[in-house]
Image (cartoon, rainbow, N blue to C red; front, side, top):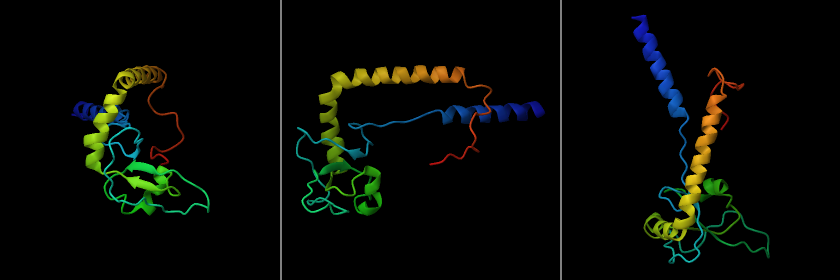
Length: 154
């Protein structure tokens, strides 16, 4: 009976450890990306509001270029709470509609960056996997080398 309990505990611990090493990254031009986008030669964006949002006024005479942002639903309405995350509190911000981003911007971005972006991303992923393999070889006994209690400092 003890063997079964120990095996189950090891399986659970191993599964949790493997799941903890998984990372997800989403970059501009992919569905689910939130942040600043470069309008460039993309068809005119559909905006949530006709006028830009500005939270902090800039000094008189200072000119700040507007930002075009794709943000999660609800953040545009409560922009004062979220502008710091995008380093955009003192800038005029236009919010693009989610449907325009996904249906117009993403396909246009992919078409423009397909040749150079795909190869560069593949090489970056290969290097990341190589580093992860090297790191796994030198980790030690799995008890951790840090000083914390596993709760992080976010």
